[in-house]
Length: 146
Image (cartoon, rainbow, N blue to C red; front, side, top):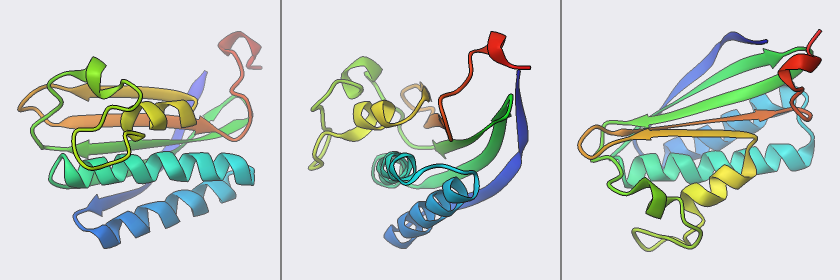
């Protein structure tokens, strides 16, 4: 069973400087929860991409970070939300190499590969929320939790 240990932070994403704060917060929180350096880097990279998407494509928004626990394993759940135009074609947006602007196309598909859990909620005109979770070690299967 997974439990939430509480929201650690809600950070605005309105400028390039806010992207720096998001990356710093995620790295610090992941380190405090026992993530190794490689896993910290993966999560910070995913968070950076998702925060930039929130700013560039969603017109700004926020990131909520929460400490979650499954069994004895710490995790960090990040939700990036905006009230922008939404994503008209999620399947296309998740395709490797797809870019809607002048980016590298790492985007949503790349962020999805860097985390353990990935969910997206978006509709044209309704904004977008991308929620990702990473675990400090391999997340236990629900039947393994004691």
